[in-house]
Length: 183
Length: 206
Image 1 (cartoon, one colour):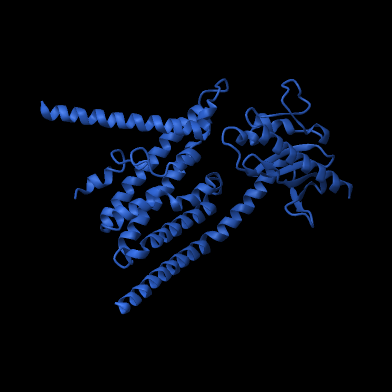
Image 2 (image 1 turned 90 degrees about the horizontal axis):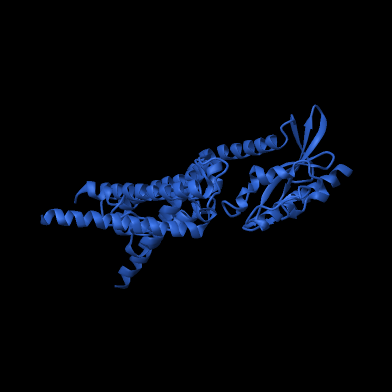
């Protein structure tokens, strides 16, 4: 009886060890193939999203000491900064990239990762809301609910928190650009 | 056993989503656009079929006491592989599905099929069952997401259908609306099945 139990226990352990071993090997092999492709794709997407933010730029130089921050150049002249920002939204952090011109105006932004409500806060990266930011200066980056107030940023219907978060993210990026421009 | 019936039962009669009502969470979360719903459906289709096959192959070597951890490990391995592939070849979809892709590991429907079919039957039966269930699940995902994207957002596959003057019914884009929609769809399908059976009954009597 005791003998049998012992062998049973041994069998159970062996079962689990083998399963995990095989599963680990399979995942390892798959990652070996897809890993490099995935990192190339991720880099490509990053370049593309920066390119779409500052279409005029022909070169993006990383800023030393600042993570994921780039200076967009055109013909050797500095035209914009691309600055990462991570405000807290309705469904967690919103990871975004903001393009700010050399003289401190917003050019555009893009949302890399977010968990906002689909159909509401999710729309932050679409034209009606996103388009408002173009050419805005630091002092105009406030959310308003007044439909006639075109100087500031109009909140998205049903998504005030997301609107505020995105606006704050842009604002922080503009502040940072101003600091860097001063150096 | 009738192999054709094993394959088709998952599509309507025992549809995993509308009739068995297993794994409802992805229907609320990812079906806001047809593309997301379709990807989720295909992912589950692939995972459930391959997991059924693997489980039916190893079913005799697995000790009964640890079968559930072993099944879960199998499912997790397959799901991780799918994730790695999506990340490499379709990063946009990977991002859109987000955490729900990880959650496929614990979808009740996959473990339920492994336990009730694959652990008791051979490879062929398990494979067909997985295919049928997967198709049923994919159809459910696509039907829900077509309605939600069309009326909740006014688009299909991202292309505007109703024109700019259409005011989207926001409730459908949100999880509570999806829940109501699923309820109506379930009721409708059950009514249709019942009507079909009644007709059959009458036909055999007459």
